[in-house]
Image 1 (cartoon, rainbow, N blue to C red):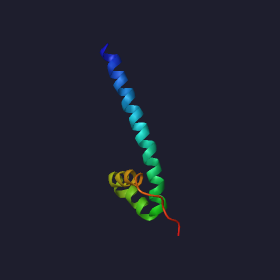
Image 2 (cartoon, rainbow, N blue to C red):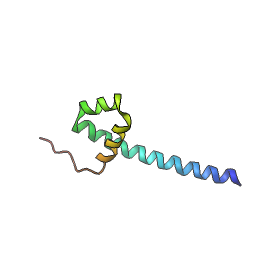
Image 3 (cartoon, one colour):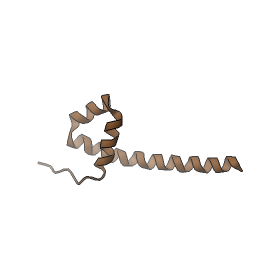
Image 4 (cartoon, rainbow, N blue to C red):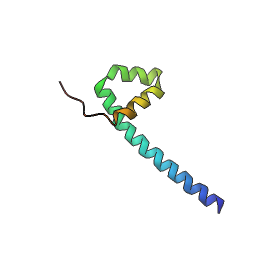
Length: 66
C-alpha cells in the first residue's frame, strides 16, 4: 500500500518537472532572440541564473523586431 502511494507521488513530481521543463524551453528561445551572446555566456558560466532568466522570460511580452 505504501509503495503505491510513493509511486503516485513520483508520477506527479515527474509530470510537474516535464511541464516546467517545456515552459522553460520557451523562455530559452526568447533569451536567445533577445540577447544571444549573454545567453551563451550564462549557459557556460551561470546556469542557475540563466534558468531563472528563462523562467522570467515566460511572463514578458513579445520581442519587438527592429
